Length: 400
Image (tube, rainbow, N blue to C red):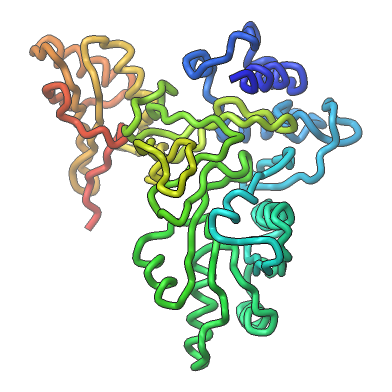
């Protein structure tokens, strides 16, 4: 974990905002997962809020101090190759590398292949991410981008690309357009998908058309996080990120196999994100990949960790439920269920307790009211009663 200590030190020296967040941290002591878990989780919403506050104050730094690269006039030691804009708007610098070549190789792409790239090159980095990975493998790229179905379909037939990179839904649109014309499918044989869900039914649909489509998990902030292999048994973690699965709302690491939020630390010197909360849910898979890759695997995308919901006009957050756990050390796993029909919201706090009692239930009810400003029922359960599925707030209301 020497690379982790170096990354924390770089963040402290090159990123003003990270230096403030990590003030007092001995970077050389951060050489284990336990030490890493003691550092605060940084959420994308915090980056957005910091950038918005800087803009409102007339600040000149679009990254609010979180980058380590920029351009003339910014307080960073290295030049940024590109800068991108996500909804918000949130501005993100391009780091050292997105490392997408490994995902493409696992999906079967090889030197000399032509890849039809239908990720967008506009504002956001997805198109450039795949493009960089293709260049690392020695592949050629057709930069199709999004839209223009007829032109892209013509390119698939006329250029005869060996593979496709983009969302599975857009490739399905292209192939259905070919079907509508009564044409045989274009000669694609492999695909790397990202950016949206890739269910088994869609995988089978592509397989029926002779296309082996695999998926990867990547974000604009972090680059490649994990990638699928031909074994199709979870996603193998990239070797240049450190991934933790944590309890939503707390940042506390969970045992392998339990569902929690994916928190990522990059080893990228230009954009040093330390314990970046993705907001995505996943879980660690036991064992190693049958293909021989030895790094840890995760189950893939299993939903969103941000389970904030509105009850009787008030927002209730996972962080508030975590606060209840801190106030009551005699309870274990907690889950808030929101039940009832439209306009008849009812909160039920389920709490695992080794020694249940009416006094404990009453104390939890008071704390629930204090923290959320809402009244709710408390149900005490035996330890192990609640599923380890990552849910902290469950919305069971009916809107029929």
